[in-house]
Structure formats: structure tokens, C-alpha cells
Image 1 (cartoon, rainbow, N blue to C red):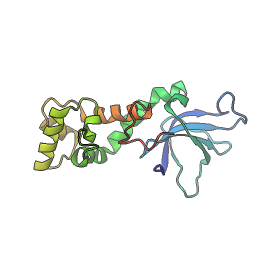
Image 2 (spheres, one colour):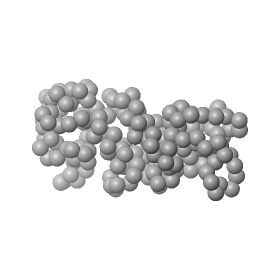
Image 3 (spheres, rainbow, N blue to C red):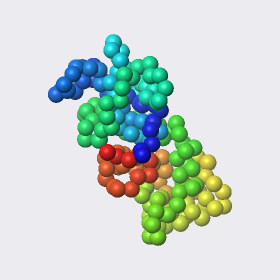
Image 4 (cartoon, rainbow, N blue to C red):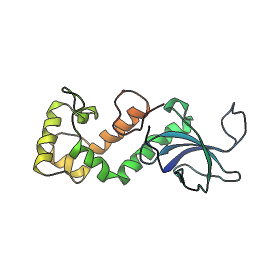
Length: 182
């Protein structure tokens, strides 16, 4: 069962829904704050939201969301939602830096030949072994520290964001950060 998000970050708000919808109702396209699920939700009547607003979609009483319509694919997003998606992902990764740095500290092998770190853009065998060696000495605490301790590694935050964007666009069957795509 896919992991469920408690909060949704608004990517786009369609006050009367998408063209072709059977009913005209206020629809939000958004991304889950923790598991990066792409969802369409219907707002309660008379409400309005803007891009980057945070909506509660958990199991309890929802003040703004009438119901979750469905999980959607990257291709189902409006062009505006696609435009702000990477910026929103960047903000979520920045806010949860500790969680993503832990990935560098704790990630393991996927198969006998492939390590999960190698799924990050820019990480090959050489960087992989440098990261593993360094994290054994002392766990990383920040993205900046990873950059300092691993020569020529590039920007770890950008690697994470790049990987999340690839997963949202279903460019690879492996999932590190995005909950199961439809």
C-alpha cells in the first residue's frame, strides 16, 4: 500500500475544475509534502487557494479539502503545475534536509551490482565508495558537509531534487523518494 501524505502543497488551483470534468468544482493539483504523491483534490465550496499553500489531507477532519479525487501522473499536471513543481520540490527538500542527508548516511545496496546512491544523478562507483568510506568515519550532517568531504561530488541537494523529478516523471522503475506511482 502506498504511503499516504498528511499535507498537500498546492501546485495549481482550478476554480471550476479541468476542461472536460463532469462537474464544475474547485480542483487543486498538488504534491504530497513527505511522499511526493501527485494528487488532485476537490476543495470545499467557496474556498480559494494559491500555489504553494499547504492543505491538510490526512485522516482527520479536513477544513479545506472536500475529498481526494485521485492520484495523478506527471503528464496529467497543468502546464502551470509543471512549471512550479521543481521549485516546490526544492523547498520541500530544503525544509527536510536532515531526512535527505540521512539517505546518504544509511542507504544500502539495491542489488549485488547496484547501490541506491548510484540512482542519484552524478554518482558513479568512485563517488559511491568515497561516500561509503566517509560515512563510516562519521555520519554526514548537512548537504554542505557532503560537498566538503567528498571531492568533486557536485551539489547533493540538486542530486536529490533531480532524482525526485525523474521519479515523478516515471523515468526509472526504482523508487527512492516518491511513493508508488499509479
